[in-house]
Amino acid sequence: GRTCDVPSDNGSHLHFEVSPDGSSGQPRFWAQFPLLWSGCRLTHGVQQGRVGFEVRLERKLLTAQPDDHEVREPYGLRVGWSVADSSLLLGEDELSFCYDGRGKKVSDRKEENFGEPFSEGDIIGCYASFSSDGAVELSFHKNGRFVGVAFSTDTSVLRGRALFPHVLCKSCSFKLLLDPAAQPWYPGPPGFTPLATLPPGQRVCSTSGPTSRAQCEVRVKFGFVFPIFLLLKAPPKDEISGGQRDSRLQQASHCLTEIIKIAAQTPGNYILDQCNILFSALRHKLRLFTGFRRRVVVVFPSADEWKRRLLQHQMRDGEHIPETALLKLQGLPTFVILCYITGL
Image 1 (spheres, rainbow, N blue to C red):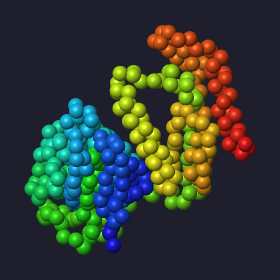
Image 2: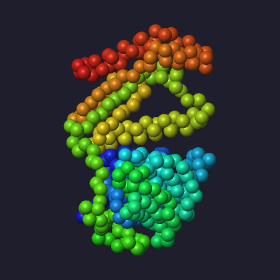
Image 3: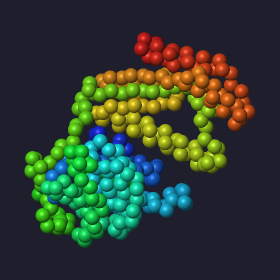
Image 4: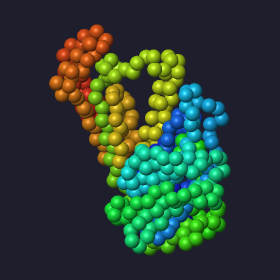
């Protein structure tokens, strides 16, 4: 059997879709939101020796250019390594290192030119070398050819943490070679061992999340009801044309609903941050998480913050909202929660 897999729980985005055999994946909502990044960190990492893994860019999923004609890069793939507690957005944190398909190397949001851009069918080899003196080098190959050493760091910088294979994609699909019995797509550098064939003593398993619903918790956080929130936070109307804006909002609402359903079936701890919510919607969402520990958190601004927002709104739009509106709104969520608890 395989020694590592693409995770489907706390090691990947909920909007990332893992294949049934656990060796490949793609963004779940690529058709609706082609510019949305998603990805995963593998279940096993390393902190010693010389180890590598391979990733193949399978195909670009879009058949047409996005509606936004200013978008020059509708596809994206990043491959590399990260520590277990870093962001799932590869390359955005200090201890998160990647080769970007635009011909860049990225870490801690800093980009530098490196190598060549990726195309469909390209195979990227990712290699980590841990020396006895504590030096760590991360290098990459493209289609069997050495691209270069992209990052040099030290085990003291990693603070004893392992590096895990990590892939992030946008509007494309990829596949990893995780079968220990399979031949490499391209021979690795001399002295390097494929991650999938490492013996257990040389691999580090990531910390697993909760495995049963009873171990999971969901918190629903919300504040004002819709009308006041809309008045205070509505985006400028000229950002997106009317019909396109309505379509985007409808798509976003549908995707969010699907993600919440996926979360309810995926062990983990979640916060649903609702700007506003109706009693029926609250009850429906919480019922999806039956078996979880369920909490509802109501958020109100302080009196001073409320006055500041009222003044800002009045200066911008010239419309007066009475201060008593806050008092009326404070009572509504309390009533909603009471109804949910008592079953009214």
